[in-house]
Every structure is written in C-alpha cells, then in structure tokens.
Length: 435
Image (cartoon, rainbow, N blue to C red):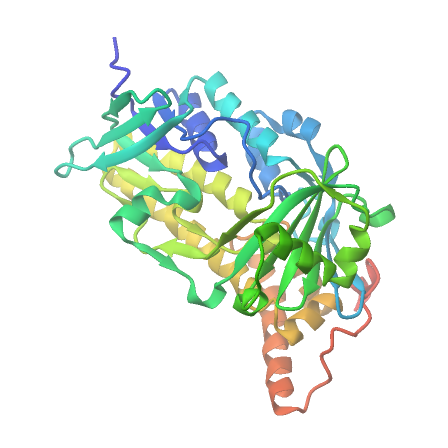
C-alpha cells in the first residue's frame, strides 16, 4: 500500500493553477495531494475569462459546468472618461477565431468547481491546511512539506515533486528571495461587487468594460444575479495624499469618473471593499531540482486584459506535464519546467507592453479609434482573446501596431503629430475590415 504522506506530487494552493495541475496529474494516474490554506467558496477577483480558457476547460471536462455559472462574454469595450466614447473589440474579429466567446464568472463558484473536479478525478484535496515550511535536502532527495490544519495538527509530506501554486502569496519565491516587483507598473487596486449597475445591451451585451480614467482605469464585469464587479487600478498619483478608508477612497474614485458614476447611480455594494498593491512581479528563478512555480506564484501582471486565470490554468497544465515527466525522467522534467516558466514569462511580456502604456495619451487614442490597416485591430483583439503565445500570423499586425504607436509617440513628443485628446471618434464595429 502506498504511503499517503509520500505522494508523487504535492501542490501548494487550490486556485485555478493548482486545481488544474491536480486534475491533470490525477487523470494521468499520479498520486497528488493539494494543500489549500482556506476553504472554498472564497471571494476572489479575476472574474473575466478569455476564449483561450475554453480549450483547457474542455480538456478538464468542465466546459459545460462553467457555461452554467457564467455570463456570456463576446468581447471587451474601452470607454474614455474624457470623451464618453466607447470602442468595441469583439472576439469574433480576432485573427484566431476557433473560440469567439468566453464567460464572466464569480470566482468563488469557478474556483470551487475546479477544486471539486480535481477531487473527482482522484486528487487528495485538503482545505484549511496552510503550508508552513518547505525543506529541501541534497539533490535527488525528496523535499519535506510541513503544514498545519485548522485544528492545529501538523502534517508532514515527502512528495517526489512539488508544484507551488500559492498565488500572490508566492510561497517559494518569497522564501528564496527571488521575487522582483516590476518598477514600471507600481499600481494599487480597490474593488467590490455591486448590485443595480447599468449593464450594456445590444451588441455590447455581456462585454467587459474598461473605463479609462485619470491616473488609472476601471473594470466593470457583469456577473450572474445582477451583480457587477467594479475595480479601480491606479498608479501612485491616483492615491497620493488621499485619506479615508478603502471604501471611502473607492467610492470617491467612482464618483470622480463621469462614465462609471453614470452607470452605477443608485447601485448598492453587496460585498466588502478589497484593496491590494504592487500588482506586477516575477520570480527570477521559477524552477529547480524537484520543484516548479506556476501561475501567480511565479509571476503576475496588471489584470487589465483579464489574462490572470488563463495564464494560471495554462501554467497549471504545463506544470502538470513537467511534473509527470520528471517522475519518470528528471532531465526531461527539468526541460519542461523551464519551458513552463519561459512560456509564462513570454506571455507576460507580450501583454505587459500594452499594459505599461495604458495611461499614455497616444495609446489611449489608438484604443479609442481602432483601425485595421495591416490587420492591426484584429491583431490586438487576438491578444485580448488570450492568444499570447507568438502565433506567426499575429507578428505583422502586432509589429505594425507597435510601429504606429512609436511613430505617433515621437511626433507627439516633438509637437508635430495630431492632437491626442482621446477625442478621435471610434470606428463602428467591423468598419475597418476593408481598410
């Protein structure tokens, strides 16, 4: 009989990355123990999925279950506080049209669903069990994972391989001191759930809305049951010198945004007001002998384009493949572990290029006036849909968009280019296809 305290793989964290990895490994016949510090359901942000999520959900066997708890999401819109104009980016216009929609979900329900699926697949899923220490021995020796349950009992595991999916707790990266915050994106966020917020109708029904405000941006995500997730992400100037509680600061930011205030007039808060800071970071070294960091435990970027859950689940799937390979062939497992971190880092870099420039007037004007010359608009929609892995057909459109941005930025700095007040009229849906 196998020792329950010596699984093939131990996983820290029961969010999307950990639960995806646990399910995949259990489906491959591996003995898996996952340790989750809290209990599901739990509140979490990152409620807007992307079309590329659907392939992973199908492989996990939960696609229809997620459909049942979600709000249909056919695209994203950008709204300018300065002009009140809106620009729509439908996923049906992406270069890769194999998936043209996603869903918005309450993360408490979504994470519970993924966690239960991993348990159903055969993984041992322990809740209210907080990892307190990890001890690595000599090369080739099993690590020791120490944890404590809700009753205070100590659990000691000796897995053959360890996956860190601890999310923004960054368990291993923090203890190994390999976590680097991104100095180019030093932002903070505050967010809550509301009831009674105005929803989009017609062609924009189900769209996530990104409202471009002064010193930052808002997300508005329609969820089931007339719930709207609203959050504000701001740079340092957005918070400097402001006083009051998190709730008071958040409501003041909403009141100061003409477009968000108009949609939330008469709405009520139905959750706590949460806040967090230092949004972007990455581990300098995300894998080693017998361990691998996946999802937010390895790195995280500003959530503007809803890539967090996708990158978590993608790295969970890749991480499971790396762990599975390592158990039979450590050399191959190390190569796949390096690939997992490399793919996640490249995806973060591709989407970060846009995120870091979101407050730039040139970038905002380009988003508010999408044009499809050299398929630029469709290339950007392709990224918004979660196609972050360097598709060949996206190279020219994305390169063209970056070139236009760089040229207009240079002209703007010299005072020679067109004015960039976010006042250019947005192209109607599909209008640029013939350009």
